[in-house]
Length: 120
Image 1 (tube, rainbow, N blue to C red):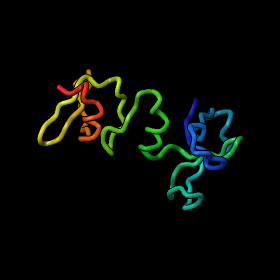
Image 2: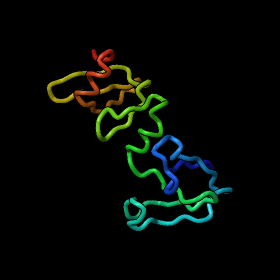
Image 3: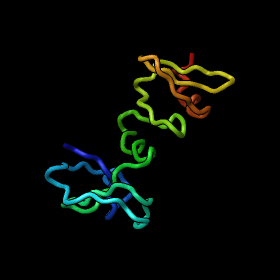
């Protein structure tokens, strides 16, 4: 089983900070972090054959990991696959992005402007 995480050491700030590893072949043990190495308390850390890797615990991490695949933060609480947006509806009560399956999520005003080609 493949798992994606973020390196705890030798980070450069580039996409290469994210890594995928095999649960069976690469994990030596799994632990909860303590307030060390700049990560919050009780984040899952995989000690792998090539060093410690933190589980992705923040939405921003998923945005960074998936941005090249069309994902964007439309609102501070949502990372969205923008290819799945059917249309955007503006309203005085808040803007929403609608998907082909009928679901919707809030979208900030600035992101509504960025995706104005989808506004109906």
